[in-house]
Image 1: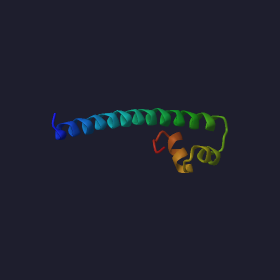
Image 2: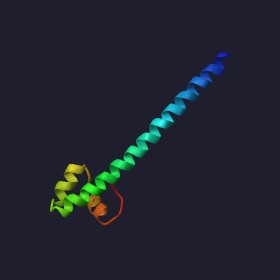
Image 3: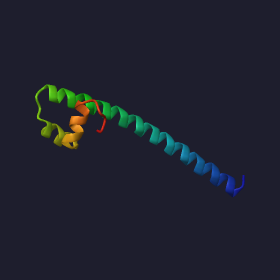
Length: 74
């Protein structure tokens, strides 16, 4: 095997590994976002103030309102 071919193989292998990690991170983010939306709704139903929810979630109050109204800004 030539040096160029082995370098290509190595870099392509690393690209595939990075792509897998990115796909997993994207899926984890989707799941976490869904959980966050569910818990925001549950917190509001339990009477937690919007400002407290926003603070705990690291979101703006507007983002919390968007979640509660079914718009996905969080």
